[in-house]
Structure formats: structure tokens, C-alpha cells
Length: 140
Image (cartoon, rainbow, N blue to C red; front, side):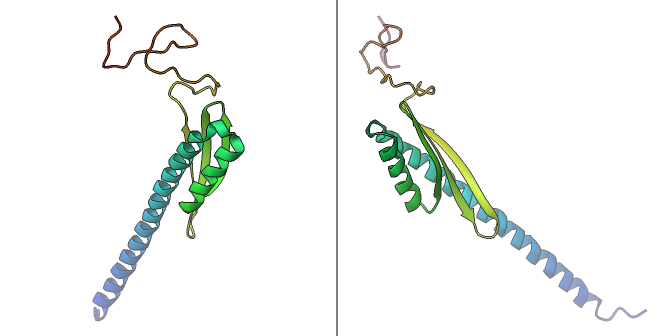
């Protein structure tokens, strides 16, 4: 039995396996980076649109599109419902497809999209008639 060249073939297989592992890890890293970029773009686009919600959906979603374009993603969907803005963005991963992220922004407690503005500290809430207090100040 002749074992000459066995080490060369074994080394070639190990190098090929390591190259495949590195390629797999690079693809996974690209997807993770794209996901983070898409999530950040969705968050910032939703916040930008919510800040300009009183000017209407067209203006607010136009600003969300501007932010998402500058971050290198595509704005797939934008809706303004009352004070709440919902956006969806898509980030492309080279050769691996697309990553989608969604975000919602608006005043706390306005998930339903009502047009009632939030009560400020010391003002009466339009629903309950009770005063709202910050956590630092206890009700008397």
C-alpha cells in the first residue's frame, strides 16, 4: 500500500472545508449587517415621519422616504393613522435576497391611531378627566 500524496489530498480537503466555512460566515455576516441597517432605517424613518405627521401623510411619508433613501434602503410602505406612523423598509443583501424591517412611531398610548393629542403634565386627559403626573411627582 502506497500512502504517498495522502497528506496533500487531506490538506486540500481541509482547505476547501475552511474556505466553505468562511464563505458561509461571510454570507451570515452580510445578512446580519443588512438586518441592522434595515432596522435602524425603519426606526429613523418612522420617527422622522411621526415628527411631521401633523402636515399630513404625503409630507410625512415623503420625509420617511428621504431618510430611508439616505440610509441605502427602500421604503416599501408608509401609513399615517392619527398620530401613529407605520413604515416598512427593505434592504438588499448582495446575492442573498432582501431583508425587511418594520417600525412604528407616535405618542405613547396611541396604538389605535386616534387623533387626540397626548395630555401634558398637569393638563387634564380628554378621556378620564384625571390629571396625569410624572413619576417623580406623586398625586396629592
